[in-house]
Length: 157
Image 1 (cartoon, rainbow, N blue to C red):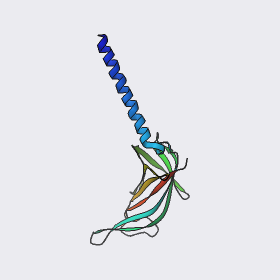
Image 2: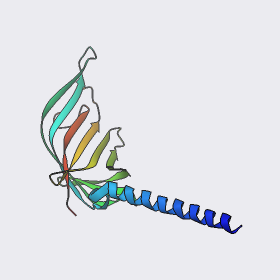
Image 3: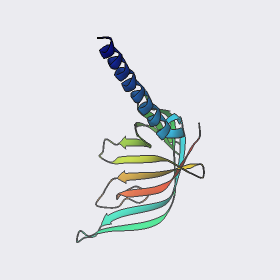
Image 4: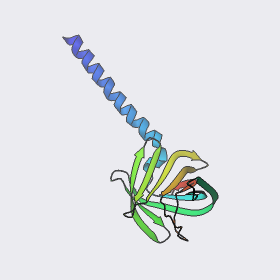
């Protein structure tokens, strides 16, 4: 009976150590992104999609000056404050191994998503911002078609 108890204890200890190791690896995989309380993201490239009258999909690439700032990031409550210029709004935050996603859903239908990848390149993190929105008649100065922005974020705690 003593040998069985020893084996059971050893197996339980091994499972506990494995669980702790997996949690440690997950935290390490998230790197400094996992502890970020604020991010400043800039997106110098933009791709805008649209459809022609015959339904053919088209995309246009152009430069962009979009800057987004995520403040008060709280991974436990899954919330953050998005600031674009003087306008702010609360967004949902979701994490996965090596990724942080910020989601903003509008009552009128559009969905905006910013994904930040914990891949450090020269002190900055790669990021993409997508706007899922479409109006049959383009509105000057507003997002009227699906857009995707490419850039990077800095942790600015």
